Image: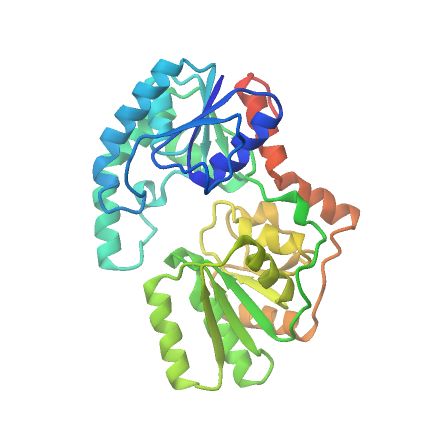
Length: 366
């Protein structure tokens, strides 16, 4: 039996594929709803936290969550545990470390002094959480047998923070969308997806778009997903100052609607300042839409500059505007059927992720 625990989307995709391969899988998580996450009927699961993970009580209850997960896991006696980060990695460590910790990056607010959380309240909360819970992260890194990093960048961070080597296992996307089209491209449309933290660099997207919209080159900026409050204020100021410039905030959308947004955009703007992996650019490329991005973190693994889009050095505003202008004036459709692009994309499928994690659980390199 393999126990999988951690973030919901990761649980859904990896556990389902492991079950289809004939593995007995049991999910233990702080919060999980099998109906929402469409889990395979063969998978058993249990939630140990009877509130939403977004509840303000969640972080305060972490020691209780870890204790309950540990009790459940000790009763199950799994052959291996796949822990998708905190708090499941703490449970894995307490039970002897026999398993794999899928690390999506050592928490930046725990370990990186140069990362600012966005405003004073965020910074204070991050420092408080760090003081209380970073010990779990550090303890886990010392005990757990195998650590899997979600990118080359994360692998380097794991070495820097914990002094441990790790194996790259890339997260995945739904490979069934490769080469599909969910709508016709709209000229001059720029898409931004989930600028939910200051590290997503949305200000670069907005500045470049406004600059080019005033010249008549860009037509519409569409923003999908959660938006960091400061970014909402920035959008409001743009609307007041330039009432003719179209910035459309869509909020949270369904998966199919998100694919439609990818397909109809001229480009996807993704100037993430610090990105451990970044699934958005991979999905955009799979649907044939080029990405304008900063050359940082996991994007150095997932993007091919000049083939899947245009890469710019982090923080270079002039080059970012120039890159957006180039993609708007010279629309490109990525040929996902080409051998190079197709082979590249298939490095990042959920089936590949599950297979690699199973190999690591068995003590083999993927």
